[in-house]
Image (cartoon, rainbow over all chains, first blue to last red; front, side, top):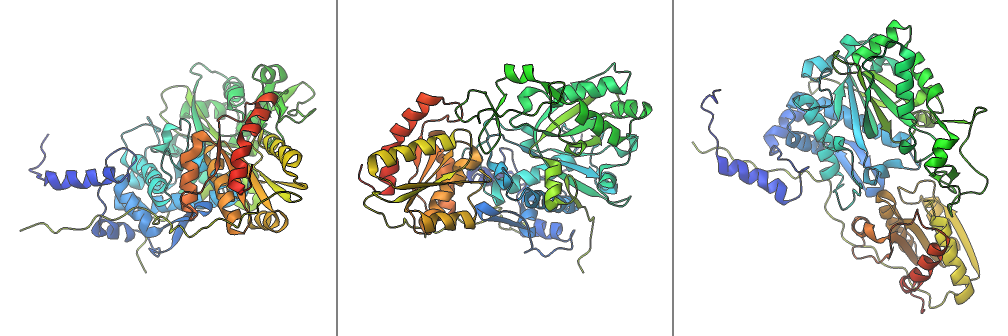
Length: 380
Length: 180
């Protein structure tokens, strides 16, 4: 391989990289030095006032404007053309924060011991125009657009919002997606319409959906021949007791194309998939008892042992007439997308932080929080 | 030709605050006074606050206790709740911050109550000192003193809660400026 005679001032490059490490301005990996020239190239890609505040963590009095987002996007290794996607992620994040309002976690979940990761899903022509990976290794490395857009959001959290680990970010273990977690939907191999159209955006729109993920759970169902088998497997994984801190859960199911095709061939629409999962994601009383989760705490209604000092006497999770506890209160608690390679019966269940439909009910608009990506706008 | 040199840009959102916040004036006794409990509603928080309130009533002549429960443990209480506590209470105990977001939020509650003129003891667990201290600085009060009790809280049972409240009481009193 030829380096085409590229020669660099290695002292200058290393000095700049070390400056960011020395001042705790990175995620632990080297960053690209951000200067006025680079930031100006990014700002040219969007028709937005550089001083416009695009995202905020209200109780920390921390705000991120368009310029600061560009500085961090440069550092993350983005190409200038990706910057509209970074702004869409911040727009969607801002909607997510607003929609959570004064719910239990609100924007404090960025500091939480749970260690949630932003999960971003790209739809529409922006995927192909910018080279977002929607196929094999969709959560994995090797794709600059996925890797750097997700990383830009983490650098904004660390730098613009000051959410440093061991200080304001107190994650007990954290989700590895906190480095980066940005995927594209495999629309070409999906039997259904894209997430953007589910949310009411016109066909051909480029969008970004923003969620907060607690975990990504790998689902093996390579020999499934009927949708009901596969969907029961998924439902059992969604309803596992270890995923429950409260009575209910919300999730994003990322179906591999094979699994999506199996569902479609069996006559299941996306809505049918959600309805099946809501109906079958259940825990037995015995399973909750074994896990010490049959009591409800005062005020918060978290699952605690029945004899816990904070358990409300006589209160327990709801059970249906068959003694089953349903963890998904409605099909709206499930987001379904298709991504990955069409090479195995593999899917992923992602536990989401907070209830998606509750957010919609509070005026949060679409489920989940989404924003349009406006590529290559020229400043007016 | 020498390369054109450019400055590296600061990616941070804001400079640290100036530290303008101050403690509210202290009362020398809780005799006959009303104590507010700002419950963050985490498991066992209300149990611990109520235990502390009972001790204050039994030993320090506290006349009356008012508990308010926050809708979100992860962020500071809203203005309505803060105003109510500041107007109707002579001192407030806030807690218990036993997690990442709620340790910082409880500390912020303490600082914000002090700014409204009411002495406040914010209780967090010791493992979250760094998060609490960082939030105090963000709210303009570097070095703000809070009560750090042993972690964990959510898994404590009856006797353990009594012991924790007993052990925390001297520090609660010290922060409220009341002789033990």
